[in-house]
Image (cartoon, rainbow, N blue to C red):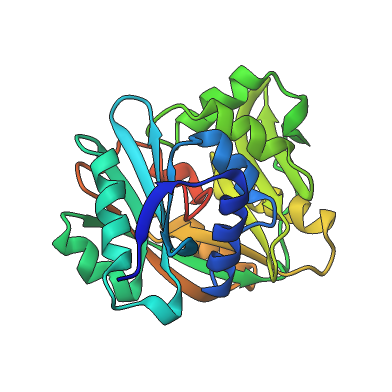
Length: 282
């Protein structure tokens, strides 16, 4: 009988997980794995069948009561044989007692509901080359986010995410092949976004802004940093201003997930969340 073993993934394994996600059409950023590993080095599980990687899941813990699940993948030729559900159970056991979030693809959402998850909103991926993005509003400056005191950036991120994630955020903005911009008004942050290279469209995430005008300016500046390159941003449909903005800029929907939780929907600033950071880690 084949031997199946589940262990904590290594850094090399996380690069493999990224390749599997890319094969699923999810288009993670090319260097995302490094930041993912910084978030929770113990939060990635891999199942091996006779020593060969077969299935995986990420179960990243934040703070004392929150977690985010992603990277739930079984190699296509091994699906339907029970390996994925074994990894799922091991991952959920690690998160016992926490409110767990995930971004579920359409074909898995019924299974997630059976496991106790409920939908909060849908994330719609919009892709294309933005056309007609506005300039920064009067009084707003766009600056390299890496030049700001990190505590200010981390505090702003905390408005849009249920727990602090400083280690992840520090890595997220400083990795190669990415641009991190902040919008500043009267010395205070009023927007923040990161563009990173992907295998197809470059990925935008997060996209936070105090207004659609600030979000438009950030998207325009990111687009200018990679002229003519298609961009993809995962937009929460609960923010109608965000949906309207990307449609006005000529981006088209290409992919959809449901943001789901096992507990209450976290109290975050949904009106300022124009694009989620990552479908894998929230």
